[in-house]
Length: 210
Image (cartoon, rainbow, N blue to C red; front, side, top):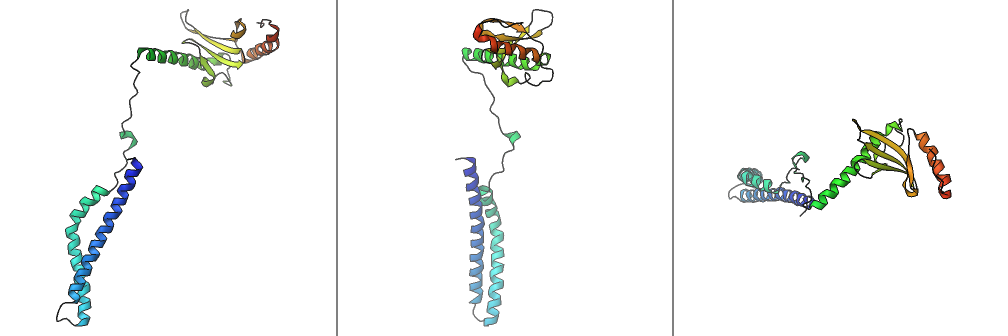
């Protein structure tokens, strides 16, 4: 049963309990009133007054006796308060048991890390953070390189060079589909010029100029 269904059922039960209590008290008051009204020896005027007073008194007495029973019944039928989100047990993430699956996850995580770094250090080429800072547009190749697609067969290529004493973050214009060597870039204006050359020269098979 869903949480919504259980809550609805609990509310319906609470309403039923309140209705039962009202019916019982009404019945008791009615019986008490009838007994007092039909008591022998009372004038008709006093019989009516006695019926009302006796009926209400009997109903009040019975209500006191019902309190503990009805309280228990209300507790069983009242909807439970919602559990705070902070107390809800969250399912803990687990790694796959298969080693090959874990290796695949690590490979994907490394590529995602390279895409993140490519966007983070792109201010060297895009100081205004107008385009290359968008992490979602970078695709990690491996743990140290990533590609930013500009057009069919044309990319900004990022590579983390760790051969020196401090890591270097290098950017270049690359056309891997045509086999041309990447051209180092330091500005978006340079990237634009190289892309224009790529578009005009690609069909001729000419190399992209540095």
